[in-house]
Image 1 (cartoon, rainbow over the protein chains, first blue to last red):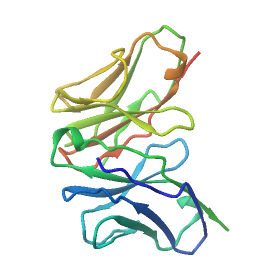
Image 2: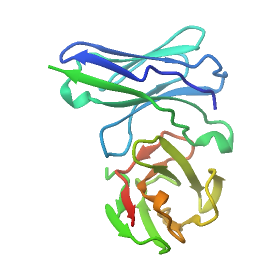
Image 3: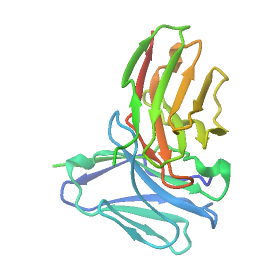
Image 4: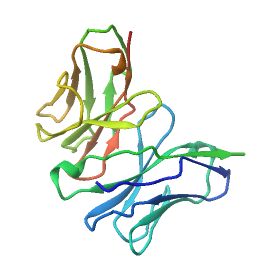
Length: 113
Length: 111
């Protein structure tokens, strides 16, 4: 799986948009970008994933650059409950051994009043 | 729809003992994944089961083993427990190669 690079930490004011960047310059054509978050002592929560088009769901938006070498997760109106570690993961799903997720160190997002 | 359930939620064992952790996947999911997350560290991939077969294994010693049952539930067994096995053990499930969904884990403490 391609490696990802994320800033170790970010702060965001409550009510503002949180924009979390991720670099994945070695991503290959059959690899998706997945985002999960982990709130303290809980299991990771799936947020969103995409291949090359921008995606939006009830939780967040995912913007993938045209060359697919980086992406941004956007939480449009961050709340205190969005404080968590956010993981950007590149996952190939066409080969057996690549079905697992390989987690990096993620970005610790702190939402403040 | 019920999520991935894991039992027990907490467990305390003594060094050298054996432990079995259990995972029930989301209904309709056939793949189960196990991860270890030691305190302050990242998630490390342990095992992946699909349709009852072990498909992939992480860089862990053989005393970590598991199995998947015909109903797709899974067990993770750890023999000869060591202090450094203390961690949060997470199970995830997916429908084939689909999105993984995680349970809230079993916190194992080895004393």
